[in-house]
Image (cartoon, rainbow, N blue to C red; front, side, top):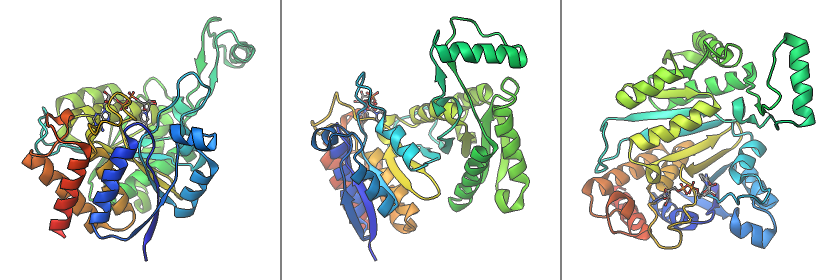
Length: 359
Ligand code: NAD
């Protein structure tokens, strides 16, 4: 039976890289029924919403989606489609593999790690109080009366909630992901000596879960203060396997890891919950190069490989990754960001041809 997958091309360079990824996934011979839906700038024009209900309904129906990047209009009051998707579908885990690819000159040639980031809590939950607002002043008074904390009158406030329930599910997910993907060690990043009740809780919950054989079996664990982890990532990133991080640190370090292996055009990603999964490249809509055939489709193609693995097609996923390695390793067909002159479509065609040959 064909897998049903919602395809959201997105805007900017999205449609170009999405077409390349679709061509490559189809070349594996895995039967996919693509259910194409809009989101982003085009959707705003045609449906009056950046994320139309029918697009969300299609993802709920298929349970799996792959999407191109979507521009967040600045100063229009619209919230980011990506944040809306994460919240509506409770996609609590963000997964971003950073693997050194052949033919891409980088400082550390043996990096092969995965960032697993908690996607819903922490400083990114959006609990904010504007400086001088009535709510901020009430909160300041409450903090003073409750615990003697004095927050300056002219302070803006953002809260950092981290819960046991929110941590348990990302920890369980990280262990399951590690075992399913042949990964041996999880390194947890935190700053629990300063934020005892948020990062400290994240750390304790992780260590407790790791001791439960139904969760932590067959995977080593270690924990490192986030500042020290940053230094070690810059120094010897090849030492790491899976990094498990709360939301804010995960956001920052996953871009750092993208930089370690050659930049945004190469890094795939997934947002995953218990019910639904949305695969997408890490990069944005790149308006500066949109419509010119200059975009590197590798990140979107590798997102397609992650999706195939999630769909239970690991052989096809391996073939896509090996085809990407072969095309990049040969170095003949590559987009300008990697120093080449090929178009998005030419790279897509070359990877699809390599997938077909391997089949
Ligand atoms: P960006 O990733 O779009 O671009 C940053 C730089 O990297 C640009 O110079 C761009 O040309 C280059 N680049 C990005 N992807 C590339 C690729 N595949 N091949 C070659 N070069 C590539 O980041 P930005 O400019 O900060 O964001 C542009 C828009 O995208 C914003 O509206 C932002 O909100 C949105 N965005 C969306 C997502 C998403 O949909 N998941 C993620 C990040 C940013």
